[in-house]
Image 1 (cartoon, helix red, strand yellow):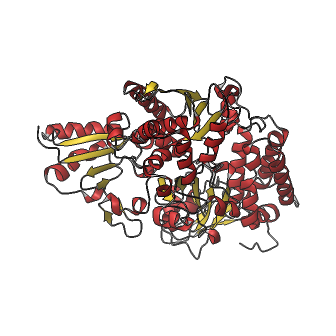
Image 2: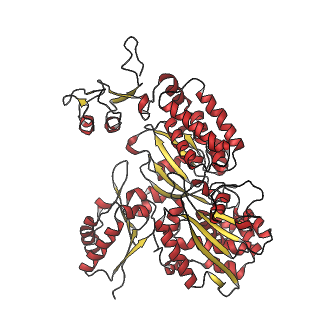
Image 3: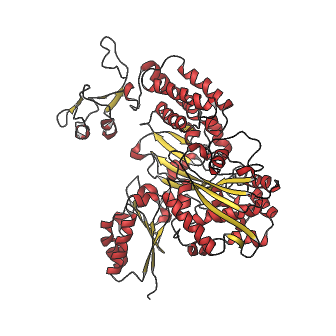
Length: 611
C-alpha cells in the first residue's frame, strides 16, 4: 500500500450530520476511489469540530487546510483540485467577516486561534467510535495511573490541588465533593454522570459525548477509584441519539479491553457503568431530582441535607458530576493539579467550554481559559456581531442566568465576577443578542421555559414563575400597568428565597437583570405601548422614513404580504392595514429606512408622535 499522505477529518457531529456530512463522506470516498487515491488519503468521521454553523466541515492534515459548508456536489472539484493537482480551493475556505478574504489554515481562523483545548482536546481529530484512536492520544493512561500508582486519597488530593470546580452550573469544588463522599461509610457507593443538558442554546455536553465518549468513561473510572464506587450511571437525555449510540459503543469497547467490569487492569478494582435515558425534564438536571429519576420515581428535588455525598442514589453515598467535569479529570491526573491551575484565576482555575450562539458571526462550541473577558469571546472568537449590528446583551447561564449589557463586556469570565453582574457562568450557554432583540421579550421567553419545566413540588416555583410569566405577557402584549416592574422585582426576591431547588431559585434572574440594565424598555412597553425593537408586535408599527429610503425595492420584494408599494428609486410606503408585522422589511433594509413606532402612532391625529 502507498504511504498515506493526507488525513481528511470530516465532522460527524449532530449539526454537521444534519447539514449533509454523511453524504459528503460518501462522495469523498467515491471520488478518491475513482482517482485511485483511497489508499493514500484516509477519511475519518470525527465528532463535533466545534464550528457548528459552518458545517459540513473538513480539515485536511498535515497541512491543516480547513473547508466549510461543503456539499456532496462540491467534492469532485475539491478532490481534483486539492488532492490531484495540489491546489487548495479558496472558495470552500472560511472567509473573514470584515473583508471576506480566505483563511486557509485552521490554526489561523480566529474562532480556533484564541481557544485553549483541554476538555475538548480530542474534538475533530479522532474517530469517537474507535477506542484505539482514543488510546493513541494517551487515552486511559490517567485511569491506569490512578488505579496502579495512586491511593484514593492521592487522587482526591490532586483534584483539590487543581481547584477544578464542577462545570454543571453550581461550581462546587470537585475535589471537596469527592473527599466528602470518600469519607462517607457505605457498603456500596455510586458514581454518576449528568448528561441531561437542558438549557436552551446549550450543547456542550452533547458535543463532548459525541466527539470523545471515552473521556467521560475515563473520568468516571478515576472518580470511582477516589470515592470507592463500584457502580456508575450516565444519565443522558434520549433526545441525544448520537451521543447515546457512541457512549454505548464506548462502554462495550472499554469492557472488551478490560477497562470496565471486574478486576480492571488486574488491580482488583471493579466498576460497571450503564446508560440511563432521561425523558427530557429540565428539572432532572438538579442532582437530587436526577437521582429520583434513576430510582424510577418522578424526577423531583428533595431538601438537603443530607447531601448526596452522604445519602444519595438509593440512600447510598453518591457523587454526581457533569460531562465536562469528567472530561477535565484525565489530564489533571496525568499532568498534575499545579499544571491545571496554571490557566485561569486563583478561584476559577482551568478552562471553560461554552456554546456560543445568537447574533455573532462565528457560532459554535468553544473552550477558553477562565478569566478571559467577555469582549474577547464575542469579538475575537465570535467574530463580532453579524450584519454589522450593534451589540445589546449576552445571556449567560441559560434560563437560570442573566443578561450582561455592553458596558460590562470587559468583565472576566470567572464564577465570582459573572455573579456580580447578576448572571451566572452556569453550564456554559452564551447567547449573544443585538439591537434587533427586545429584552422584555427575552425575559418572557426564559420564563415561559422555566414555568413549563417546573416540577410543581414547591408553591413558590410552581405558582410564582407562572405569575411572573403572565405579568411579562401582559407587558409585551400591551396590558402593562404602573407598578408592574416593582411587582416583578418583589415577587422575584420571594421566589429566590423560598424555592426548594435551583430551578426556582434562579428562574427570576433573567427578569432581574433585564430590569436592572434595560428598565427603559420595560417603561416604554408599559407607558408608551412601544416595543422599539419591533419584537412585541402588539406594541409596534413599522413604517418607512421617506428621507432615508433609497427606493431599492428590497423591502417590497421580500414582503410576504405584498403590502409595500413604491416606484424604484423613490420612497416606499407600507400599507398598515395589510401589514402583519413580520419584521422582514425591518431586517432586510440596508439603509435603516424601515423604522419602528408605537402601536398607536397612526391613531393619534391631534398630537405629534415622537419616534
